Amino acid sequence: MITAQEMLDLEAKSEIPVINLMENAGKAFAKALKEKVDVKNKGILIIAYHGNNGGDGFVAARSLCDDTEVDVLFVGDETKLTKESSINLKKIENNDKVQMLTLEAVDFSNYDLVIDAIFGTGIHGEINDPLATLIKNLSTTKAYKVSIDIPSGINPDTGEKTNVYFEPDLIIALHDIKKGLENYKDKTIVVDIGIKKQ
Image (cartoon, rainbow, N blue to C red; front, side, top):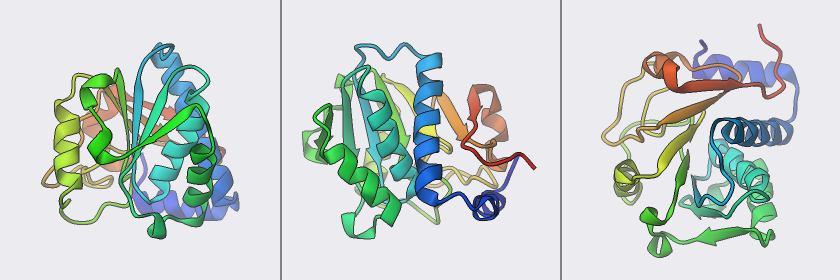
């Protein structure tokens, strides 16, 4: 198990460019998901924010869209996207197989799988609206729920839950399970993103 800071340190030490790590993460996530769940002809919704977890979600969308219909709900601020996430958002905006949705246009009951690429390790403090209401709505959907690395609203180091949090059926952890997710280890798969094990 690893803390969020240890993970950041490992990423920095690896000297692998962030854009490559993001590509590795999104592809490894999609591959693991396809091994665990039959995604063929399933409706998939990926909800992404403007941090690197959202960038991983954009890569995952690209990696899944050959198998099934993928919709992406981007709930972040485009001006706050990291450079790498911005590159990957543009790649899916130009992809005919991926549909970008607005919050007003989304009907959560239409999906078989919902993928949480909202916060990752970068969560601090309470979650405000409209994200708080969105996460509440996601938690009540009947879809199979998957988080990339960390369920949004759960502290990766302590496991402490904020005012609202995403309750997944499956977590696909990047490189190693984060310390705060001990209680979730039975529903966690760890994938390799190219960083050497310590």
